[in-house]
Length: 431
Image 1 (cartoon, rainbow, N blue to C red):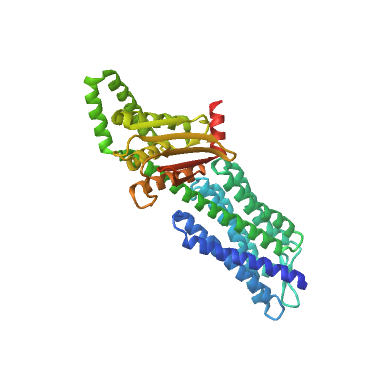
Image 2 (cartoon, rainbow, N blue to C red):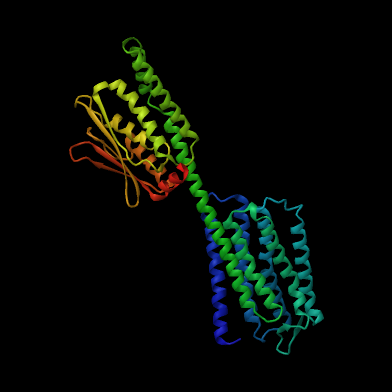
């Protein structure tokens, strides 16, 4: 080979080695990876690394300064390590397709083909038709060399057929990863039957390794997001189950008193309180953003119950012309409840709270403002923890945000921003 091709070859080899190191490091340090997948990818990237060492060794021994047996040993070693990832892709394909490994005909066929390949590779030194020994103690392609490559091509084609057959069992990302790990190697092997293109095969190995690396990375990211969603949903459930006891007691006491004083209002408070409880418990089962109109009705029911208790001491103003967007369940109602619980001063006159919405250039905005005494936005106190949980669910479930500021005339302003994707979903749902 020329100096330019040597440099290119070593660049590919270096890329494969770095990819192997990154893969091993990534798998070793990240928690939460499924045990079977962790063992598989540790083995996969280890084989890739050993393949790099085998290629480097073969390159050194292929100088003609070493005995033919040593050169052939290096060639066999390189060829075996180059073929192992193909079999490993078969195993991972079956695992992702939920197939029984022991009973799989595909795996049995691949193992038979790999055994044939190994047998041909070992016998090549003695036949001279697959590989032959030259005067410089190197080994070169024999007249029937293409027969040696056929079992590997068959393995790759079987993997490709399996991926296509079970594509409905995979996510689109996983299916494309199998294609990237297989198609370049298929093309390289077909070319290898006629032309010596080992660097191309190594590039195929790098692409396959990169595909597997991306598969692990994306799976881990998705798993982390899924865990965060579960944590956020559990916090929502806890928030529902931890309704203020005194709020329930006061509501029931108010209804008891109103039964004699104002039976009609008592019935209305019962209806509002029932609607509030129903929407609270319904929120536990909601794992996706809901229409803002539904959350607004929940908030109205809650404020109607509170207003019946505080009578003229609580004034609520709604200005919500824009409602065609989605938010996580239990977003607005806890913000309003937080404002009353921590911002209301019983000695400061009427507590005023306003709920406003508007359409912005980037999405939708909800503003909850009050004229209360305000509260520290410290995330270690009760109010801060509640708002922190809401902020986290906004970020995870719809990419939204929550900001807390002091009102100019006293009180607190909580602003919730929802990006356009929430509004678009709701528009589609309303049609």
